[in-house]
Image (cartoon, rainbow, N blue to C red):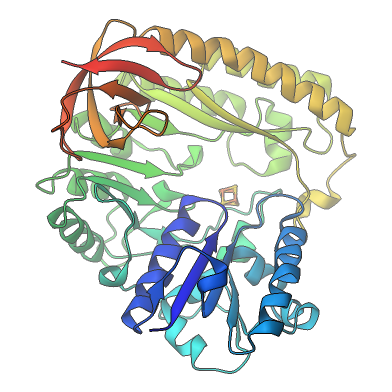
Length: 431
Ligand code: SF4
């Protein structure tokens, strides 16, 4: 039996694409292996969100050249966002690559494999999505794509180029996929989309809030999460659905990117600092226990110390439980390349450190606030640090490592008394 290996970089959308690719290859009769050396086909599912992503892919391809020289029947495919961005150039620079396929063609893998040296970087009208062929890796959790692409065009972002325009799946298709996933034991559902809350069913016109409510009400869904929300798309229907369904996670990743309205305008984020704060207030009023997390870009072209101070003050005001911050990374073809003076790298690094220092206090306070409390935890599996313990997540998405009955079943919901807070996680004992 022929074998395949998939190397995946990047976000959950890419992870899910790899599960879809894996499912299609298994349907073609191939077997998945854990090493490139054992594989008859190697797929690199790439990510282009940060600087140097292309170099990383080309240097990986350089290493694969030797394998191809030893075994000419080996097939090598480059998929994902770097494939979309580089297209034909990949075959020109690395002629030992057999095919290049962008994210819009994941559902068309069969057709791509049937062509010689295919470069499939279009966005077909009929984007096929075979939910039954997804090779899900978790026994308790299923990712479900509800929409692909993005219409927002933030000036620093390459995603609209690599993932195309927004396309939402229909309400009924999504609900069917959720029901099948639940029937197979996946009691935790995570809805995915680049701007997940911009979802709108093109048949019925129903919006993201309506979808959240409908998925939360599918029998057997113990926990419902979603990623990634755009602040400008938060509306009353989304907030009401979260407030009214206890099984919707009390965690919201709401990327702010900057606390300065001047920089937000340059980023084309479609909200101001004031508007973002107002959205956070509205959500907190409805769901006081919400755990907010965010993304911040430090050193965006033209960012002054004053702009950065506004970011710090916004972070101080919101006190996020989790925060992901990066130095601005110029991406090819994006408008931010022409927007303003680049910030000196040493200055950007220093700002990044100050930001992390401030956030660390907020995270610590939040983690410490759970000590002594009994929290409902959805069991995910053995703990990575100590196989004698279990790991699971709270309603608001903190990982908890806990000791408990060895018969504890995966996917069950348990009460866990929190004994201590670690750097990013909690520790406790099942009660
Ligand atoms: S909304 Fe997100 S995915 Fe879309 S362009 Fe902006 S950063 Fe990129």
